[in-house]
Image (cartoon, rainbow, N blue to C red; front, top):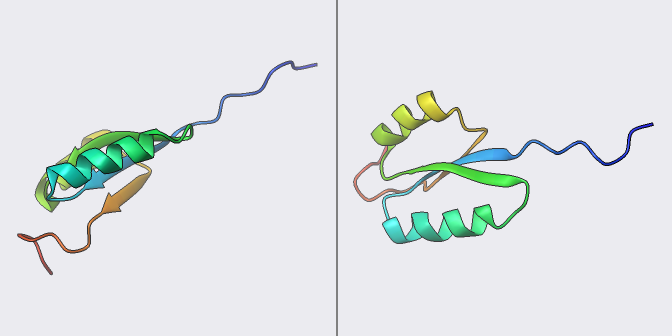
Length: 71
């Protein structure tokens, strides 16, 4: 008989936003959940692309309207 529980895998999140303040707030809020973990935060889509390749996040938290990046 098993005693205890199997630890759940945390969901890895990559934040993408051009505002440093928003990235910091989102990181704090997301990390406050036991099953979520921010693996990185990018300030633009080009940086995010490289981080996605290396960090392999499960979820992207993406600001849909970055000031410098549209389309």
